[in-house]
Amino acid sequence: MKKRFFLLLLIVCCLFVKAQAPAIQSRPYPKNYFRYPLDLPPSIVGSFGELRPSHFHAGLDFRTNQRKGYPVHAAADGYISRIHVQVGGGGNIVYIDHPNGYTTVYMHNDRFNEAITKAVRDYQYQHQQFDVDFKLPPGQIEVCQGDVISISGASGAVEGPHLHFEIRDTKTEETINPQLFGITIPDKVAPSINAVGIYKLDNKPFSENTPHQFLSVTGSAGNYHLVHPGVIDVSGNTGFGITSFDTNSASASRNGVYSIELQLDDKTVYTYAVERFAFDQTHAINAYIDYPALLTTGRWMQKCFILPGSKISLYPQSINRGIIDFTDDETHEVKYIVRDVAGNTSTVELHVKSHTPAPAQTWQPQGTLFHYDRLNEFANDRVKVSIPVGNLYDDVDFIYSTLPMRPGAYSVTHHIHNRFTPIHDQYELWIKPDRDLGQLADKAVIVSTAGSYAGGIYQDGYVKGAAKGFGDFYIRTDDVPPRIVPINISNGKNMAKLKRISLRISDNLSGIKSYNGKIDGKWVLMEWDYKTRVLSYTFDNIETGKHNFELTVSDNKDNAAVYTANFYK
Image (cartoon, rainbow, N blue to C red; front, side):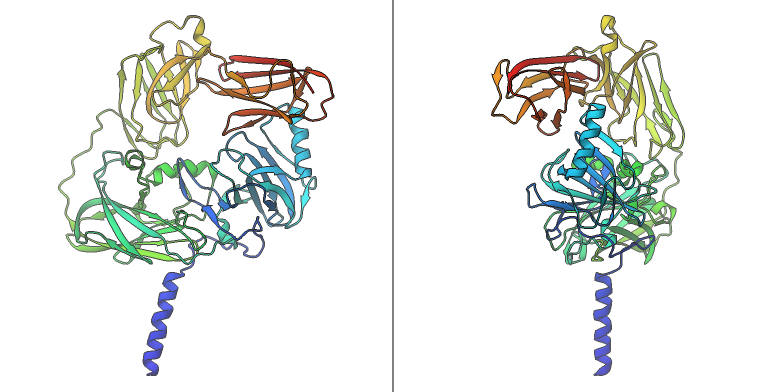
C-alpha cells in the first residue's frame, strides 16, 4: 500500500514538474524589487518577445480597460533619465534609471506628471519642435516607488489605450522579459500548438523555394499530436519549425511563447528563449520566422534552425544551428517542447524515417551569388545596388530584371530580387533616369510599386536612395507641397470659446518633415496626433483681442505649404 502511495506521489510530482518547469534563462533577476506600474489586476494584450511585423515585442502591454486615464506608477525608486515625445512609435515615453542597474520604460502615456511636463515643455520651446528625445541628469527629477509619473493613454502608433512597460539593462540597453523580475501575469494555461514544419535544406541557402511541408496539429492541455499521424520520410540536411501561441489565465489574448526546445531522440538540438535582446537585433525576427510563408499565407511559422547571418541572442543553445542530417536509414523521434514564462508546457512528437539522400549536385545560382557575410554589390549601366555586411541572413541568389516604365515615372521599373528575402536594415540603391528630369532633379525620389518611399538625392547622374527591402523600384518626382486643411479655424473667426486650434495635414509622397506654428510671429507648440493626422495648438495665456496664426508645413523634398488666418480670442 505504501509502495503504491509513494509511486502515485512520484507520478504526481513528475507531472507537476513538467507543467511548471522553470524558465530557461542565462542569469537570475531580482524578483521583489519592482512593483506593477498600474493599480489594476495584471492582464496583458502583448507579451515580451511576441512576434510582430518586422520586430520582436520589447515589453509587456498592460490592459487599461480600453480607456485612458489610469495613474502610471514608478516601478521602483530612481530618477527620470530620459523623456521621449514621439509622433508615432511609443508616443509619450518616460524612462526611469534605478540604482540596481536597470531602467524601466513607460510608453503611450496620455500625459506626464507636472514635473516631467515642465521639463518637456521647456525643452520643446527651447528647440522649437514637438517631437523631442533628451536625457536628464541624476537628481533633476527623482521618484520613489509608487509615485505617479504619468497618466495612461494611447499616444503614438497604437490601436487602443494600454501601457507598454519595459525593463532594460541600463548599461547595455538590452530589453529583458519583465516576468523574470516577478512582474507576472496569472497563468495556468499551457501554450497551443497549431502546426509543425519540415524543411528540406540540402546544402542550399534558405529561400522561398526551399522544399517544405506543413503538418496540422491538434490537441489540448499541453498534449498535442499530428492530425494525420504517421512516419514521415526525411533525408539529408533537414530543418523543423512550429506554429504556436500562448494565452494566460487573465485574458484570451494570443501572446507569444517563452521558449521552444527541439529534441531528436531525447537529445536537445535547438533552444529558443525570449529572455533578453538588443534593439539592433529586433528586425532579425524575419530570419527567425519563415518570412516567405508569412507573406504568402499569413502563417507565423517559427523556424527551429538558425540562418547563418542571424545575430540575435534568443538562441541560448543549438547543435549545427538546429539543422539535422538524416543519413542513417533509421526511424527517429522528433519532439517539440514549448513553454510559457510561467513554466506551463506543451509537447508534440512526430516520427521520421531517415533515408540516405541521393548524391548532392553542386548548387549553382541562376543570378548573382550574394554572400551573407560580405559586402555585396551589383551594377550595370542603369542601376547600382550595395548591401552592407550584416544585412543578409543567408546567401542569396540575386535576380535582377527590368519592367516597363510606369505612367509618370522617370525610369523603367527595376526588379531588385524579390520581396520574399528580408533585409535586416537597409541598402543603397542608385537608379539612372531614363528621361530628363530637367528642373525637377532635386525633387526626384525612389519609390516601390508597393508604395514604399526610399528617399532620393540626385547625384552623378543617378537618383540615390536607401531601401529597406527588395522589390520593384522606379523614379518619381515630388514637387507637390503638403496639404493643410483647417478644422476649426478660419480667417476672422472668433475663437473665444474654443480651447485649441486644429488642422489636418498630409503629404502625397515623401512625407511630412517639419511643421511650425506661430501666433503673432512667435513660435507655439503644435502637437501632431499620429493616428488622426490632426495638428493642434492648445491656447495658453493668449490675450484677448485680434491675433494672427501662421502654419508652415514642409515635406522631405522641401516642398512647403503655408496657412494663415486672423482670429479673435
